Structure formats: structure tokens, C-alpha cells
Length: 121
Image (cartoon, rainbow, N blue to C red; front, side, top):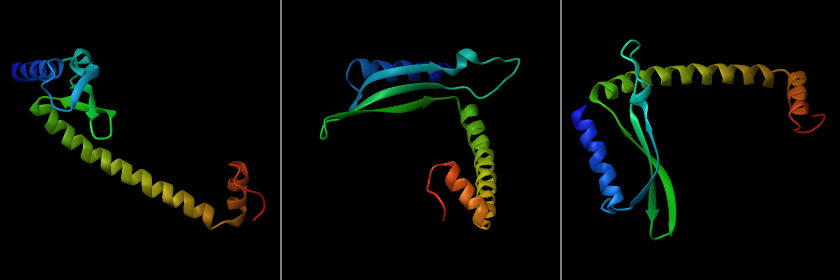
């Protein structure tokens, strides 16, 4: 935890002292550890929304930088794999739902009319 806090402090100081390259400001910080409970452990990190200036295009964009402990990174990788599987299941279900509609001309007309995409086919 000490190294995480040192890294956060270094990063913030680099931005505030204008020594962070194209990162010119901090728009928002969210401390996920503040909500962490050892009684019910879960994923936690600290996020900074930073402002990046593109000098060539003279525009600013906002990006997110995450600071987390190694254990949280390992947890995040495992959880992301499960999330990806869930997304694939959702995708397959959505495709199946669409195929059922496409295979039935009456359903196609109903859906088209319901969402305002035309009249009779």
C-alpha cells in the first residue's frame, strides 16, 4: 500500500508541477479504497480522470488512469475473463432473438412499426 500511495503522490505532483508531458490537469479523482470493507472484500482501485492536451490539434481529451494493488490487478484479470464470457452469452442470446424475428414476417412488421422504421413491408 505504501508504494501505491507514493506512486499516487508522485503522479499528482508531476501533473501539478507541469512535469507530466501532455497531461495538463486532473479533472476528477475517485478513491475506491474508501468504500472497501475487510468484512466484505471486493475489487478496489483509485482512478484519476486526467486532461491530456494535444498541441498539434489544440484540443483536450479526458482519459482515465487506474492505480491498483497487484492483488487487485490479478483479481481484475480473472473477473474480466468472466465478464467477457457473460458478454458472449448475451451476444448469442441477442442474435437468437433477432433470428426469431427475422424468420417471422409478422414479427418483422410489428417491430418495424413499433420502433418507427416504416410501414408495411
